[in-house]
Image 1: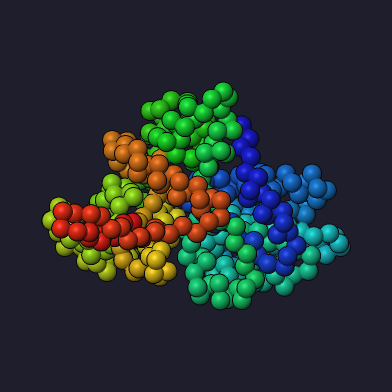
Image 2: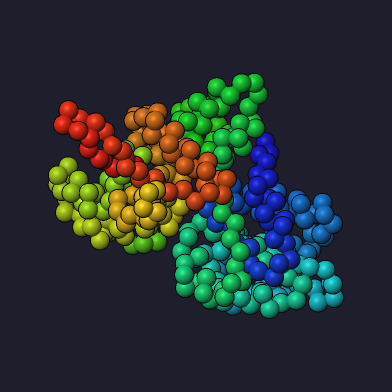
Length: 342
């Protein structure tokens, strides 16, 4: 089953040969590897590029463990390039954040002749301010999301009722389309959340209190579409969880979840005043299936789920999405009064 990801493939094709490192980012299991190693590689081959001019390294593959050292990786690539071959060599790197000092290696590749570099990563920190500065404008990001509903529905015939029901419940991670039993899909998403996303966040950020992090995710999953802020969440922990999780720790946890592309923040914007409001914000899940899995598929609030899906769809189309705030004047028996609406 081939799922077309034309939006992202077209971006990679347009960026070929621009002298910059093309960086595909996005949540794990969203299809980045398939995009680069299958769809883009197929494009290169059909466009006349010879196989020996394509160098592939997947850093999460044990075969390439030794190449997680930047100098070793750089030397491997240099040795793989035939100096007598006048054509461009395409370097495709997967999970590049697993390489130590990978910025040094990528900047080194940019100094090689007839080389075009494409990399992928599942953690936004490798595009942090410091690293972008080190690239000095030589990095070019392609942000990839899980399947949109239009992409998801490619694999269904007939009306859209059944694919919508599936998408609404289980989300748009591509592997789900290979599973035909709802119980399998539920087990897959719940296992993925615990063993991949959550484990990665805990280990990468050395989170000491995994249980409290999970409780925070549960709160966010339950309040999709609602305005929240660290202070409000801290108060909820004190009153409901009997925990003294501080505002600063909650801010750190929110940042970790965003860095892993698990959630995204929509900031409040005062439409009339044309200014951002610092707090509170809304948080949406990158994939609605993961949100539902965290709540054991029990809290199916149709309005909030739809809001999350629309938020993701707008970002998939390239929009920056804020939460609008307008003033509403409502009449009372004593006159009118003003309230804020988000």
